Amino acid sequence: MNSANPPIPFLDINAMNSEVRRQLNGAWQDLMWSGEFVRGHAVGRFERMWAEYCGTSHAVGVANGTDAIWLALRGLGVGLGDEVIVPANTFVATVEAIVQAGAAPRFADVDPETLLLTPETLTAALTPRTRAAVVVHLYGQVADMDALDAVARRAGVVLVEDAAQAHGAQYHGRRAGSLGAAGCFSFYPGKNLGAFGDGGAVVTSDDVLAERIRELGDHGRRAGSHDEHVEIGVNSRLDTLQAAVLAAKLPRLDAWNEARREHVARYRERLDGCGVSLIGQPDGQLPAHHLAVVRVPERDRIRAELARDGIPTRVHYPTPCHRLKPYAQFGTPRLPVAERASREILSLPLSPHMTSDQVDRVAGALQRAMSLPEAVGV
Ligand SMILES: *Cc1c(COP(=O)(O)O)cnc(C)c1O
Image (cartoon, rainbow, N blue to C red; front, side, top):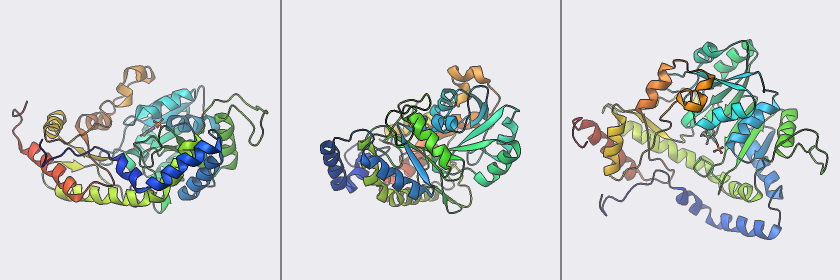
């Protein structure tokens, strides 16, 4: 690493914030002097913007993406004694949320090309106790919701979308989050639309469900009332500050996602024929590409080589959830696709503001690392 080769950030959040610097500064100032730190006007405003963007009737702000999932499940009446199907290769939060709702996760395998839940893997995981499935749009690519929905309907199972990596992704012209009974988002700073801390939302076009989730997340308070607690809830609300930050950044989301698509297309082109392949892109959609993930043999050696070149990489995720110790109690089925993928996947740097030169440098370093004999550099 030298000055001609400055490190490439894995994700450049500052570059995104810089684009809306003036709006962000205004949002902080307004909030500070409004005194409305919780349940302020900016929350309702962002909720309306986010619902409209996603193409749903409602968006309910919550404290984080994990809460979005379990509140959606509880709002749908899923809980104790129920099983919820979940792909094993997801961030642990998806599974945590199922347990938090009181249900038992049932792990499913995924498609070998896209690493997404399929009608076949969903079917294979069904039992008489299955009440719901949380479909994860991993890396910003949308699972085949129409096909999954056909299976779910036959089985009497409700589909909840974990769209925490898929803000703005489109599936046959419809946004991720608007395709199931409820769509769950995280606004963790590193997501495609990120706040200045934790945040989340559930989107739905079901009026009753939206109201239930709002009540649950606000101490069980009946909507619009102050002291009428109609059920046992929790405190899970989107901060006014976070809502204001998200409202300032949302107008840029489509452009940032477009830039991500361009970079991923360039990665695909540059890496063609060198033994590295990006995760396959399903048909009929515009992905949000939260991450640029390749599959490589000898992943850990390649990672070390790239690190030496000043190129940070990560692994999303090194252990499929059914192999994580706390979740072994829910059964450890053999899920060969998810298990094999966990040993080969590698996430490359990806930011809307990275340059084509940076993409080329990463791709070049990866090609070099691939061509090195195995024993070198250990
Ligand atoms: C980030 C993420 C979550 C959890 O969101 P938090 O806001 O961190 O609680 C859930 N599922 C997936 C797939 C995620 O990437």
